[in-house]
Image 1 (cartoon, helix red, strand yellow):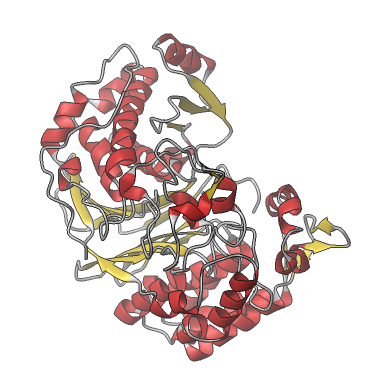
Image 2: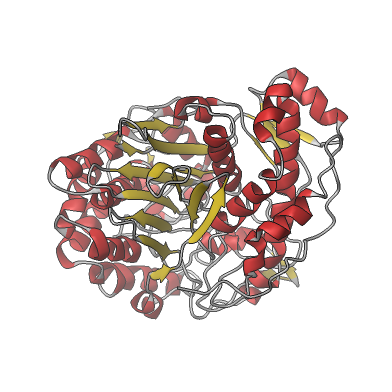
Length: 529
């Protein structure tokens, strides 16, 4: 079973399964193909986190997060003494060293069953021949035209006759096809030590960037120790820092475990929303203070302690929104040991491989830069660092010293690929993940709670109206599909309510523990196919 946001990527992944590949191979094929057909969300110019469970129960957590260039400093984002977030979001200073290809190759070396080159076949063909873009893709292009105009490589790919491509027009990416062919034939060295790194380094040198060939040559994907916690008898497996997802999904669930969530939902759905939102708020306050790259910052393992969750849960008022001035103080300060414009890929196979992969270039089309001759959309992950205390990034998130810009550091991420094992069982029950910046974390929490607490089917879980709270700004984001009664109750309880059309984009695969049948669900909110 394969679940991605684009049918061409899912079809390519299915072909890999049919040709003898396993779920890991299929996930890699899907990710590479999504970089062609869904390039505003992810691609080889970005990064990813990959969570794998093998048939024997072994877990792999692969960190393909981008790194800050060796010569990066926080000062390079200041103008006249003030941090300028435009510099970390668009252009030459916005990009970290891409990690996706290195992570894909590490996952393939650990678990792959088909030749490396086979993962690129469909993606390179589609890039070379082109594909008709959807209305959603066309809208994204049109909204960024002014920024694309600034960069010749982006203009050449996305703008024809003075306008961005429209719905139904074919997007041809010949340079990207050549790059994919090179990586398929020569391996990651073609990207990290060959023509791609050279072209990007030369472009950066002529356009005020600091990313260079040495940064590419020195990049390594990392194996990390997964976060393994429990929720109402189920084992929950998530990504460790520099993902904040595994930590805070676990932290929020630990708080919810202190309450009868199923009863709260049945008695009054507003009561359920209130309790979850208050738990989200408390967790995101901790995220802003404690979370960062564990190779640079001491992220306390006590954040996921059940005793700490009890302390935080005791602060939740059942009848009113409680102001959260700052972070909490977890009992155990021992650090975790190191071992959104985004997309999520879920794959499971009959052999028993399960894969949850979340990949991104950060905001739509990343830095908006395609370096001529490469076809690669470069990320703008430098915006995921905290440029200064209290300065929000593109998603409104603030951070502290733990996530400041430092040479070779990995910026904090919200990506939350997750695998959940059955109650009192060591067999996978479902896997899920999401896109949407900080809404990734809250979407995954709602997905887990929907299946376990509310006993909903995978489709009902994903279709149910969502909500989100990230502490700063202090507002409860409610999807417009929530009822007017819910809106009124939340306002009456003191929540600063903000309406949105969508609070995250999620994929899920569920396996029936009795029949073994797979159910895959792609985000129902995606109207374009």
